[in-house]
Image (cartoon, rainbow, N blue to C red; front, top):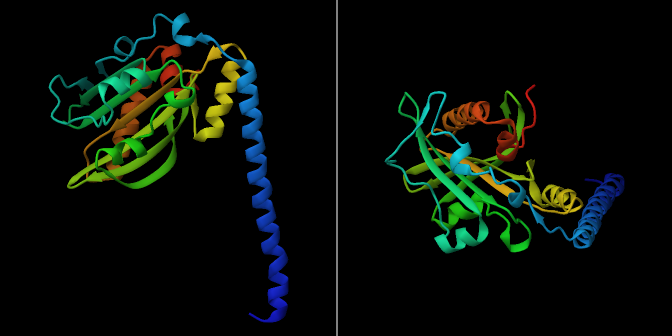
Length: 245
């Protein structure tokens, strides 16, 4: 590259650097402002205290569509935390294995916490799976289509020796799906301003399948079938979905 090209290139590079710095600074300032708002709000009312009918075991059916709960599952749901830790982090958990008429199995894991502030924030599967010895091969965002709208989710392809386990999961805070700390903090502040302690739910499905593409297709069908049979308020709590489109 000649000297003139170097001169022309430098302003463009500096402009990009300045833009990145400004974006990072704005995000940092926003996080500080949100933290201050959160401290000022001081929420005290737990959502679970005013919602005595919310119980994972009751609202998630054991039969729906082409799916039936497998009473004696042959596959184990990944759960690296001890019971003591689970009891401290989550108010309620649910783990089931479902099977369809083709013999395909889906492992469902739900974890609900009525206080997701600070150290009680739900653990991400990309952290939990490696803790069990799995390798995370891919990690990407996805919008899952349902009859009630899209769910902002994340997909992982994981492996443990010969075991291949594609995973789809998402978080909800106050009935809204969130991606990343900024969205989570915004949802927490919104609840805090109404005096409510931010609650949260981790929704995770996985299956043993050498083909991630096939696994994700079946998982999407499973999720859509489940959302169809849930009551509107339970669909909002589990999937952040409000009304039918």
